Image (tube, rainbow, N blue to C red; front, side, top):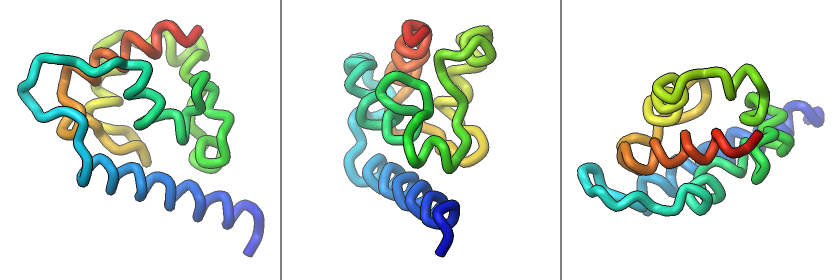
Length: 116
């Protein structure tokens, strides 16, 4: 097995584990109004691929070719565009609206804004 194949397998395993954890251990039910700390949510839901600093400089992030959340291309997107990506998913990234709720997804948008 090549290194690229191993990285892809690792990334898919991490993605699968993240999705399974979201299903088994949701942090907020839909319709509740109390948002969780966005930093903690980012750490538990996003950092395995996007990195703690948002750079995407992780094995999974490199394998999946995730975007640097600090980049001008990401930062110039509207809040609504970022929210829709987080809530509905995009490409290989799963949507988080059902497991996190809209308030936490909005909190993640705000958190991404401060990753510059």
